[in-house]
Image 1 (cartoon, rainbow, N blue to C red):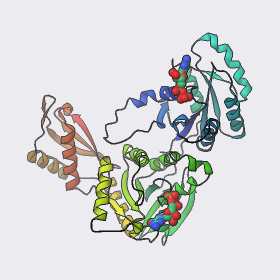
Image 2 (cartoon, rainbow, N blue to C red):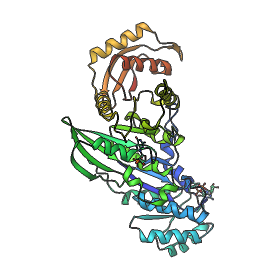
Image 3 (cartoon, protein in one colour):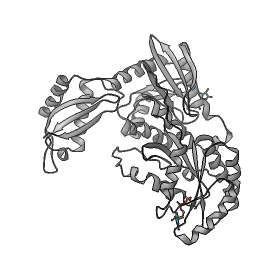
Image 4 (spheres, rainbow, N blue to C red):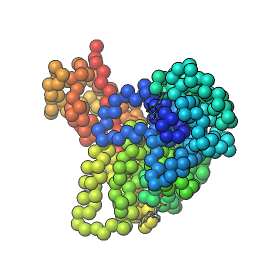
Length: 435
Ligand code: GDP
Ligand code: GDP
């Protein structure tokens, strides 16, 4: 589901991060047990009452080599372009600053709803100061204290009042995939190569978000929707300065797709930034295909491909379920193979395994290799069924869930992968105590 986007902006040190943490606080308690997944604290999903939204702390966007004022201006511009709702934070102790006035001027011109939060109002005495913030012309200032959690509920009430309703475009009978990767890895070229000879049914379906363009096409009787974020990335000059930012726009494309084609440039290899975006896809349990593009530029020796593959596997340990394809969007080599993989991975993602076969495999696995003694006992799996697909989710009824050691579950997962065709899809194992 594509979520509405709320951006927190304001000068440095006004308390943006503090407020951000307050708002997402209760969500962050979720333990991230995926090894290797780097959490980017730039954005988090937050919720209030029955609404969910994506919160961005623009203060976390690194814009290097720019003067101070310029940084604030760029951050504000990004928020204006990308967010549905803007929370503008000012500092009650400092009073209205010239930077506040500059940002306010930018906000006047945009048509997005703006909520003005005046922070550091830790007690009633300072409350008097906040009237001066009316002069920014952004409506009623809301007194908050990020540090003490005062007024945060008021801000959240205001956010969800103006947050647009999510109205997702749903594509039945089509395999929906997105193309994700850093700028210049060849995403646009890949979209063109994939659409080359295919029958485009509808192009430029502009979804609910401004993040992507959807194109529906047909190939060998199968319908596909490609969610493309690339074209939009080239909108403005400032995006070049904000490399990291391109990652943000990929998020809702990932949310809306079944399969993520994660493009790596063979020339430049893997960067830390790649991990953030693909980590999000893993977290969201999406099927993933790793596509190494620009393979035409690589001088090949005997083991070049195997070496490259090894490097990827080492860098993305948490992505071991994703197949890797080496292609060139330019020469269109192996484009057919991408389609084959998409179909395969989609089958896996969507698969439903009959209960009897499933139980045979799990019982055999336990006979072959008994669970280790852990937390005071040995795990015994009595019965398994598949509760869900997209991704395949298996419920294991066991003696005591706490006896389950990570490595043993890993073993069970691998047995399932060996027995059934589960390439490219994540698998979820849910443990239930049999009563
Ligand atoms: P950012 O640069 O805008 O993200 O600001 P931070 O969240 O990092 O906060 C900057 C400083 O202001 C830190 O020292 C915080 O402890 C402090 N601060 C944040 N919120 C409050 C508040 O509600 N009251 C007071 N007195 N200090 C605060
Ligand atoms: P995007 O920013 O990820 O959408 O990347 P583009 O599709 O715009 O490609 C960036 C540059 O890489 C362009 O100059 C492309 O022509 C080039 N390019 C894309 N794919 C390939 C490829 O497979 N091989 C080579 N040699 N160049 C490519």
